[in-house]
Length: 537
Image (cartoon, rainbow, N blue to C red; front, side):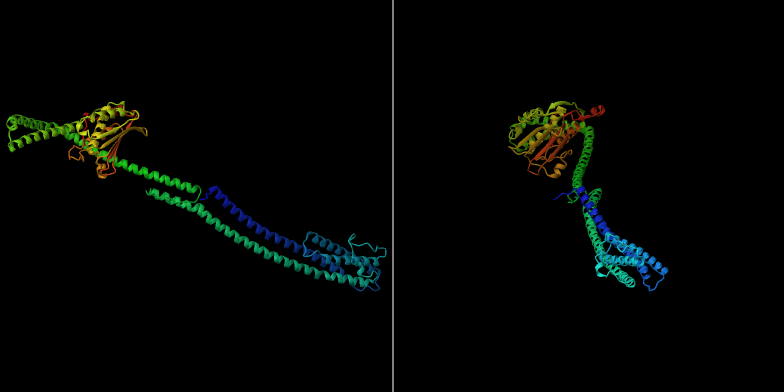
């Protein structure tokens, strides 16, 4: 997917805005320029028309009978001719200015021809009125008068004035036609300006619509999706995902938000698991405290009757042994069997009460830096000499020394309990694998067996006091509880996992490498069972 950063999208949006402004400015400027030029052209045409009107009035004053004029009348006529020449000069200057500025519909050749003819007539009239006046003293020297051959040089004064009147009478018509042409041109420019302005407006509206769609797609929609995601997470929906594919920093933010929700969900699940674990530990501690009080209160009272029962059964067994040894009577053999059973069960009950007393008594923990690999190796060598475990294999091949700051006797009891439990759960020729290593700043011991495995409900209660799933139906259910208690007192962790029944189990013990930072008072209160033997679960 093509990625467009936000800065590039902002540049595109800014370019569209600038384009809209330029289009509007271009259309408006063209319209204003067309209006301005039309106004200037019309204004100049009106000035030329006004000058022509003044010239027409001046010439009309000459159009009177002039036979047998007196000297005063001829002087007045000469003055009027001079005034007409001045009016012609004003008109000619305005004509040349309009032509030079291009503010005309044509090049002004017709009006210029008429002006030159009128200048010729006025000059000749002055020549006839004043014989001393130069006949070639024209109003516009240097201008090529190419129309002079059209008229005879010698005509009468009246005819010359009449011709002058006819020429000046043609000016309003020509100027009217020019003015009408200018109006037509202005009308065309107006229509062109309208088309340009409306086209610009439509283009700007289209660009504005596109910019609005882009702004909604690039900015508003991603912001709404992010806001919706934040609200879902605020309500506790940590599995909510923001599916944003904008190809910019907004998408990166959405992906980071999704990663954050995943982390929060995992953290929340871990916290929930820790809370449940702490709750189970609290319940377990309360049960252990109850066991301690129970053991401290009644263990001695139970041990005395149990000892009496065991001793009496043993005494009866010794006394009856001469009579029962050589007898084939089934009743005699049954009596001997029952006496043995009474002794075994009495000593078994006594063993349980002793374990309860051990469970209730606590001693100080003496921590030191020890090699867990060597400790495990010692326990393995001791277990391998026990007859009932000789058919089962224990694999332990340490690759390095794994040092931890623990109480060696307590951790030895933990290792012994876990190995005995694993061996008890396996069939003949089963295999137990043990590993010792460093992992995440902790010393780690792993016990993997291919025994009977555990169901999820068993895993949840495996460390509870008096909980046991021994295949023989025996066991006190205190071994793993004591193991869990020892590990916790060392500020470590113990976990148990199993794929299911018949698929083996894995116990992992993690212990601190360095001395745990605890106040002196807290250290003096750290206790553990005093017995240094395995307590099967």
